[in-house]
Image (cartoon, rainbow, N blue to C red; front, side):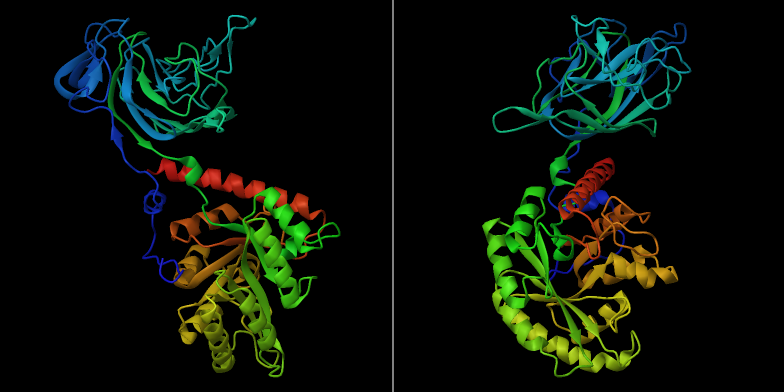
Length: 517
């Protein structure tokens, strides 16, 4: 980041973004030239490769060397238990079994992904017993003792004697400070041989025959060895923290979507945003509380709730030279001093065609004056494209920001107005974000149709998640605001639906990031 601007030199994969933002990306190799990563491995052996025994399809043979670990011919070989314990992980496991063999991988020593000869087999004894199944739990006191097993979505098992691969993203259970469990363990994604077989499957407790019967925030990787011949190679995990991945941008609400009959005051709005989990608000000069006086009240209530004002929105009418925006802006800037706030400037000029460069000189002079005043207060300016205004498109905003040439002047990407203008010409959104990235200070989003509308974040055909993923790939870490102009209904319900969707987007992105590590 330079002066708050996200700099991108092209496409950056999600894995690189995850590491660049300080997340742990250490690959821990559990198989290699020795057994140093494991506790007692005395009954396991090392090989260069394995293959089906030429005279007994229920056994494996081996070639001398290193890199592959196998449990030999016995069926009672103790399981391998990693010395290191893990919480959330991205894991990769390659395995081979002979005909009719059985093994498993236990995450945290508690939650098993089954390894079984399921090639071409449609006769399942119980859910979770297939290769790739999340093995069931067991309770002697239940009529049906096996329960909560999860079959893979599709059988992608290979024939015995072929190497197969699990790729998994696992989330450990969560606990509060008192040790009470607040969230179950979850297999976020499991791939078998490159095919997704599980997604977001929670496990309420340890599966049957687990190495550990309690639950904790961390535990070992365990490779089962006592159910039949099995070989493993290229077993590695990347420790991660899924809570620190995904959408780490501050998510605030524009006050165009926080006001109704029950929420007219700054106090009622800020308390509601705090309870729902928003990080702050974007203020409009036409807020019912009124101009700078209303802003002062809003700032006080935001401070009382440990929230932040991210931006204040102004419309500048360049065709009205006597318009009193300087006084209101200057007063507001004083109130925003040292709050790292952003002034959103929408520029109109009814005497000129939309996007006309003829108004650039006047606009640049006005923006520089405002930017210089804002700079003294530690504030920034983000030009705000608005459909049907003179400054209508993101290209207009970028052009003016370049001409203004002030370090504290950038642009806003507003999804609704982009859809109403640029999107109608089939402009590619990824190219738009790439072009805007060096100047991007603020992004506002909402649920929308492809043609442009303002809905709660859970509605509309437009793929908002894809936009957020592109922003993440481009390294944008600045604030993202929820647009709510014109929405009807209960604002609390609208805001709750939107932040719930935001959280689901964040979880989805975290899974995508982890998958690419």
